[in-house]
Image (tube, rainbow, N blue to C red; front, side, top):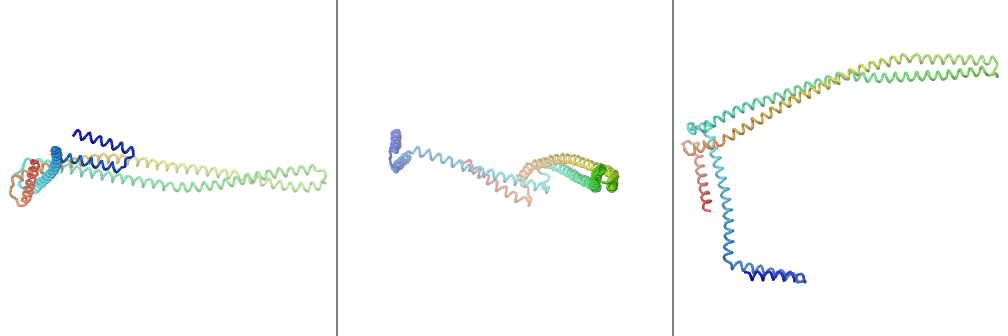
Length: 347
């Protein structure tokens, strides 16, 4: 073996050195095939190696078979446990052979009572949660109606306020027009008075001409003074109206602000109520989940007791026409379980 290994190493060294020197690839694969044939030949001649390999594969095969049988055995035992539970439930629900399995029955009875109490508690919790949700919805609707009422009560004030704003714009326009008219009349008056002075100083004009022009200017001055006075006389009335509108606008704005404050107060009250109800509902839902878990736990505790009761009845084999089918199924399962256990033991 040692000599053969040395020869193989030498061959590999020769192959790779040759490939670096430009040896064709087909020669490399040819030599590799020869090496593989030599290894197979050695394997076929070495009986001890073959036995070890066979033993290894047999052990692997045995383990795989054992795992498969154990899995099947586990499944059969689970099916038997389920069948015993079904038998126990049948006997318990129909109160068959009430004198048998007394201890187990007492435990089941206590668990049933506990479950009924928990279910009653669950009904009360559900009722409480439903009641809180209804109350929350009623409060929400009540506050919604109040908000709508406040919004409706605010509308006339807003409409009136819009009207007053338009009215104030018209008054401002009238004030501006009369101010401009008074200002224009003032300018024209100064201009006319200036013309009167110019005429008075004009020596080229005769007395009759001066008198005639003065009369015309005097008329213009009187007319302009009248225009100015008319415009100025209107201003106080318009200013007074504007102040009245401002006062009314202020009162309306205060009413609108009051409505807005009331709305905000209602919204805050609704938010507080909603938070309170939701918090209480959440607490009850936590209790609901706890009770649900306890019911589930109670049901879980009943399962092994049903199995135990079924096992007791199955062992006693008390005659009852509705239980015969259970007995026959149990027998078949026991037989399959024994066969599987035997096979596993033989492995």
